[in-house]
Every structure is written in C-alpha cells, then in structure tokens.
Length: 75
Image (cartoon, rainbow, N blue to C red; front, side):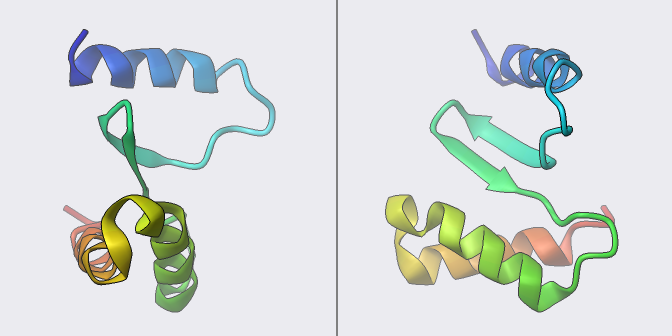
C-alpha cells in the first residue's frame, strides 16, 4: 500500500462520514497534517495544526510544518 492508495481510501471513507472529514495531507498512515479550512484564519489554523502533531514531532518542528503548510495552501 502506498500514499496514493491511502489517499484514495481516505477520500472514499470521507464520503461515507457525516459531517465530512477535515481536509488533511496524509504523508503516511501515522503522519497526517491537517490542512487549512476555507476561510480559516492563520492563527486558528496554526494552533489546530500544531496541537494535532506536536506529540509526534515536538513543538518546534510542528510549528515549522504547520507554517509551511499554511504558506503553501494555495499551491
């Protein structure tokens, strides 16, 4: 199973869940980065993102990942 398989499965499952899942970038089955939601303010996103990945990556790395994800949200 590769990243593309996991993303396809996530999309299929998210269609079956109410309410829809929050968008996320799935890097592997253990590393899921939440994506900014439409209209979400930067500080709200960064707080939500960091709190969801800090346990795995530590505060400093989580901040870097989340700010990078925010900056690249339109890419």
